[in-house]
Amino acid sequence: MSKLVFRLRNVPIDEAQDIRELLEGNDIAYFETSAGNWGISLPAIWIHESEKFELTRQLIDEYQIERTQRLRKEYQSSRANGEAKTVWHSFTENPLRFIAFSVIIVVILIIYMRVFVFF
Image (cartoon, helix red, strand yellow):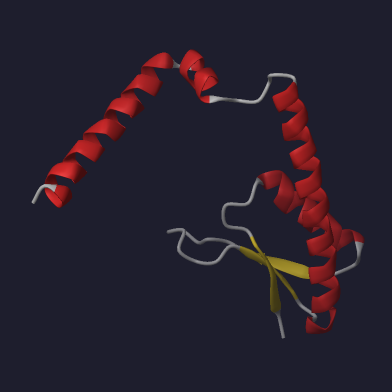
């Protein structure tokens, strides 16, 4: 019986590809399901052989721990070098969009305050 091993919703493309390569490299047969035409189904990676579920989960867990550590180190080094994206970088890249979104947020907060707090 097939078993779900990895959900693909909101997963970066490179991480999903790494998981596929990890399974192929360890000779684990798998198949994928997509979100469907309306995006309401479960996009995921499933394995055919339920006996390999524990091994597969262990491999994926180890990969995710390694990935988390690697991405944290990359972020810390970019932050130390001043290359990490900040609010100021967002403003300087596209000030008009930044101001527009800020105004929209303020308008929504004002509407919320008037409707739910003052009445």
